[in-house]
Image 1 (spheres, rainbow, N blue to C red):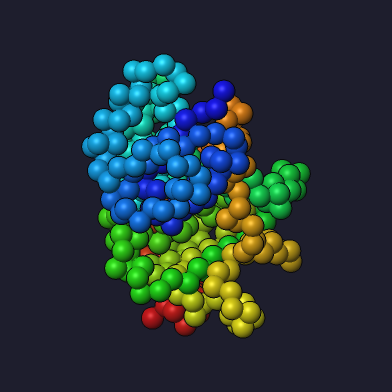
Image 2: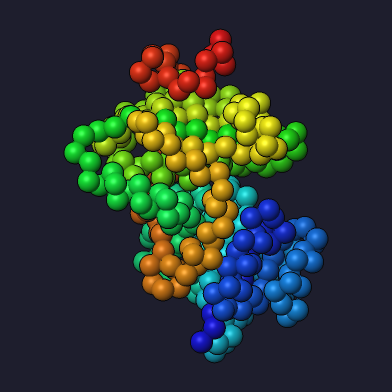
Length: 317
């Protein structure tokens, strides 16, 4: 039987990846909501989607469908809305008898996870999140390599993705709405680091600006110097010359995994995992959400030659 899906935030940047994943897994899109009505993309996937501009009317529609036969109700709600709304929209999905598939970060504040966990138990529904880097083959292979290592290692994590002036004006530029740079663009990378190298033993923040944050963390199996930025001027020159606006890299000792490509093509795999009874849930997201919250709250520390990321040279005044 096909599953029925609804999408919240269907007019946003990330929604097309979810629409594609719903289609490629052989399921059906039946409802969508977005305050922006420029959603002609829906016609690529179905001409029979109930569309709403108001969340309240969308909620009522799901409520009515929940009381119909199983083949008519919504089984999954995919949440692609601004970060600060995730908690509320996950609860909307669960209370209407659907499982939630939520984009990163699952929530901004770590204490909200406990409420969602309780609601899972009350409703019998599940909360899933999109941690697609855990499915990237090169990183799965790296995890297997790390599992066999007996000694701790040094890691240099770099993620730079250029953003224009629009970013600061949008909800993404508001720390209250997005969680800030570490949360909005860093959550995947910090989840990856703790997935690969274990829990956090020590955390330092060396630089924290509206568009750039950097620091150091000691994990169970690695010391990690990390650098995240929205400033395209920080992208290595050879990438800028090629016209590339994103640079992602993990350097471990003399080895480097540059994963700027393939990062955005994994949503269908995420959906396949969820639909097969696996998928990543609340507890999978807990460590990284606590970590990015800690980065926002931490006092600024002075880097040393062992803890400072090379990219912060000249940026710290």
